[in-house]
Image (cartoon, rainbow, N blue to C red; front, top):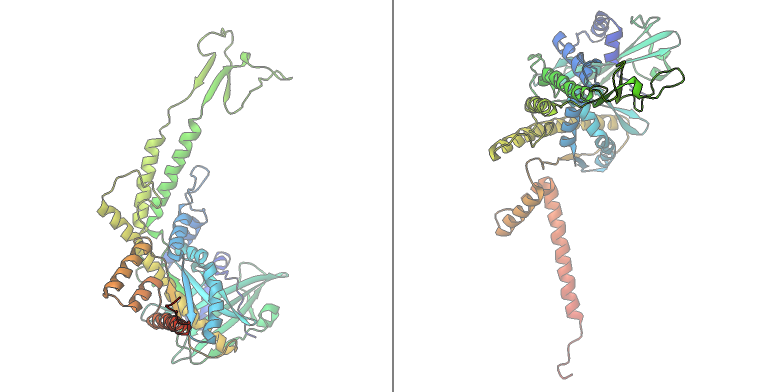
Length: 485
């Protein structure tokens, strides 16, 4: 049975293997080069290092504020909060809904990775009687080709592992062909060295790869069997590349300055700690004659021989004045610039109380963040739609559920700039005025499609009619009241 349980180690492979070896192997397999420029590869490595708190400038002398992970996580949290995906229409849709529920449970964490690295691949595969998903980060796959709409139509995924004295590497390529054909090819290599691909071997040499077909061509496939989430910001690293950039790609230098300013703040507190300078004659001695300090961090020993205990300098308190306010103001100014460059509203990272803003400035700031989040949600929806297509194809190929249609409805929270309670109340009043239909009301406030909204309204009308009829029948069957009693 064809299974793809991949560790997606292409990022690691690039560090261990010579780039020309990978290029040659991929070109031999699919006849084309992987489509990432040197500038994009360098930028991607920088974004990944920043996310892992391993940026070049982070040293013993410069402390990290861990801002990249905070930015990626906050955008992911805001975009996916209260997110729901409803798949309906048939028993096939019910099966897909069960598989999609697992994805939505993990979506926030995975979108955080996609935000940080510029993209994320959702790749479905069959495991027994269910569909599983591989979440492939932007540094872990090789894009090969794109269509006219800049959608990825071919890419290669890598799997590497060590067995005994040998290193084994498998490349799996997905490629759209002419018409409705889709080709999946696998090729394996074995080497006695970690830095070389070695020679080509049969897939069966690794038990986990034994059931994988070397070359499979599927028919009636109209799009790739994976979904690509791209962070929705123009690529200013390589304007010719359709790949996404990190959510903090335009703030790399600013984040470096944030870390430096943060380090200054930490040093200000560390260097400004209170000290008590005491002559050693005022302290008790241990068995070796060394002064015993009540607190090693607070007391500093002086050797002032022959000085009177009442003399100036025999016991001195040193408490410097801290300059933390000026440093914090500088840090806050840089954070506000980071917020602007990352499409966030002021106050998400910076202190919202440090600078007064007019109502218009606040609205523009919120609108900027709303636009960013809305664009991210659109990309999530597009990626999950492509994922559903791939899941549907594999469900058919392995007969996991009856053939049937499905329709997906995506609902996101938009409370960044709108108040749901206020909108609900206002819309209800408009319906009462007759200026809005009940169908539109349900679509706006419950995120339903027009067909689902009509079905829900019909159910409510039917229940209301039945309840009214039951009351009439109850009144008719009641005994008549004797007015003479």
